[in-house]
Image 1 (cartoon, rainbow, N blue to C red):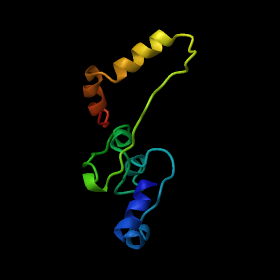
Image 2: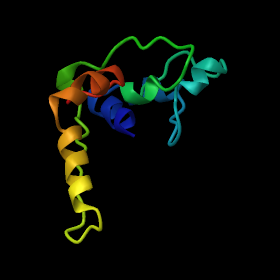
Image 3: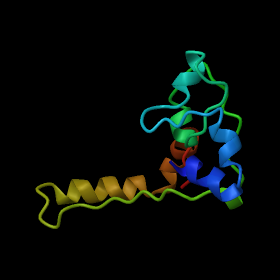
Length: 106
């Protein structure tokens, strides 16, 4: 849905929508594999889930809207210590290479 709003903001929606299909769920890149599309626009982490495609690169930084992921736990969690350890690990520098490999930026 971000891309649909972006092309409106850029003033090119009519031209793009005349030839485009907006996919509201799933991996847009699957349409590349089946031959239904020549171009797919989606988050890099989602594009990377589809084999047999080439991820060209991100939309220019000044046009992006970052998606921020957060985590938390219940105050009365049964395994609060384990949950805290997991959350600390996920926020640690050890996880940065895995995040980047999957298309996410820490």
